[in-house]
Image 1 (cartoon, rainbow, N blue to C red):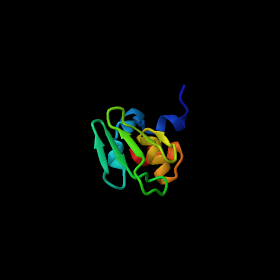
Image 2: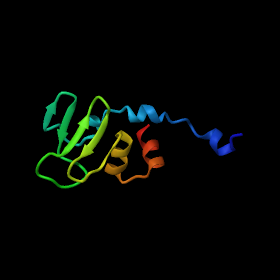
Image 3: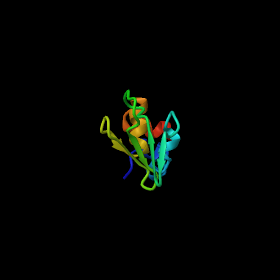
Amino acid sequence: VMSKWQAKQPKIDIEALKAIPIGELMPEKAKRRYGNKEIFLCPLHEEGTPSFQWDKKKNKFYCFGCRRHGSSIDLYMQLNNMDFKTAIRAMK
């Protein structure tokens, strides 16, 4: 049984949000490209050498500098200092 609050909330397609290409969320263009991977300066910390890697096939990121990783939702949350619920509402 759904509560009145649950019934009024529009459904958010989490998988569609995870499918947003991480490259579209990046503030700068890729510095290097290697097959299915693109390398960027990490937007999550200051650095001089690109260490942020986006695996386009999996649509996941990993930064070798700050060790942060995840999906497009995770990146959006970290870039905008938001919790999960706030981020998915803002992304839709």
